[in-house]
Image 1: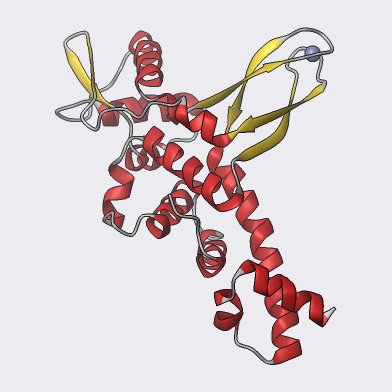
Image 2: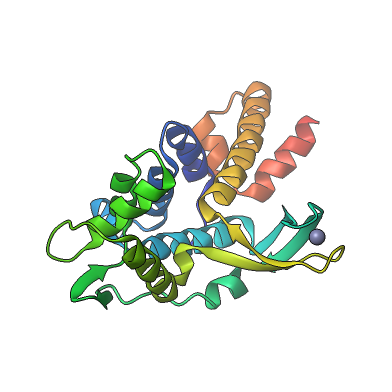
Length: 232
Ligand SMILES: [Zn+2]
């Protein structure tokens, strides 16, 4: 995966602000994967989107992921430090035509499009029910509560990148838990921070030299930094 360029990052920050996180992630992937038809990106399984997005953020901002999560038992904040490429290598991508068979019915893995449709419901339970109904092969069909639990477990096993967990351990009380890594949020926070830096750089260099935004963004990061030093 190639990193996003400075002008692509600024475009993503600009256009992404008004979009739902799912659309934002798909927009980032449309920029990063010009060989894929943009309208087809939403049809891939959710884990495909999350894994590609993780690869894109690793390439753009470096593989290191440093963060923290609160211990669910004692509330202590525990840090984690993960290599994003190692994490990615441990997440197998599902076969595009993967199907789950249960009680005589067949379900495909949820795609970004299914997720967006299911989000029209208000409560998490209805969202889950809608999502699974959408994924029934051969037409939308209601699922029972028992089927929901069973299908969710099997979907998670088939498409682990759809819900990326980090194994956590509390050094204060010994509790172990799984922290959920929201790649979309993580990446977006990095995009926002990077865009602020880029805008600041454009502002200072444009004022000092009269250059256009596109010319400043086209400079290599090393040249931008060198000119910023000269401007002081
Ligand atoms: Zn604890």
